[in-house]
Amino acid sequence: MSFGRAMPPEPPSPDGSTSLTSRGGSVGGASPANRRMLRAFSFLRGWTFVIVFVGCCFLAGCLGPRARPGISPRPRRGEALPSARFLPPLKTAEVLSPFGWRHGHLHTGIDLRETQGGGDIVYASRAGRVVEVGTRRGYGRTVLLQHEDGYCTRYAHLRALTVRRGDRVKALQGIGIVGDTGDATTAHLHFEILTPRRRPIDPAPNLFKRQISGGDRQDAGRRVSSREH
Ligand SMILES: [Zn+2]
Image (tube, rainbow, N blue to C red):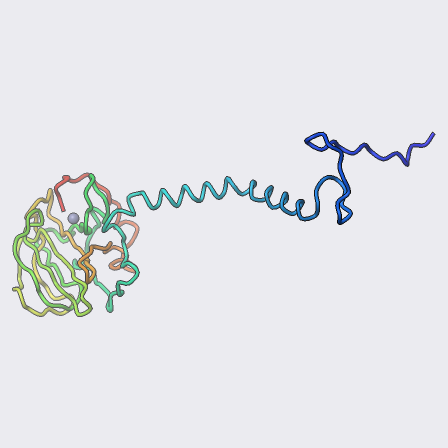
């Protein structure tokens, strides 16, 4: 009896045909090139889930709230970065409400609550020129400063203004007093940073890169009126 020399039967090909020896001497129904293609196909099939998952994430990112106009928290490609640092416009402040979508509306700035007990001075975040003072609908008494690189900062809901249009101000010079004018449920400062194209960006990363502490954000995301700036 011979046990060791028997060859296992060759598996039938899917179409039932017998396998042929190719020109290159391959046995088994597939040339080396075909095998490479099959291996590549199997590899791609294994990655299909990953590719679909990444594609869905990409689409969700494009279609999600971050892709809405004006929501980008930083200057876009082609927009110059600020040439100087923005400084906090209040001596001590808590972040009441962050930049972003709120009740279906874009909150174009950040809300800062005074913690000095009322009547706090609002300071210029950077040196600049007063290009707008007065009352804006919803914003109440407002100051808009333009800085030398074209960026602007807006200060809203002020109780009083201490500058006039055309004034030049230094960084951290007082420009007004915190109040609740306009649509404000409580006295606070609504602060905006606008790019040279007057597009709002998130002030928080510019203001608090170093200064903010964990406790400063504990009130972030509170419920506010849908009309409030
Ligand atoms: Zn606000």
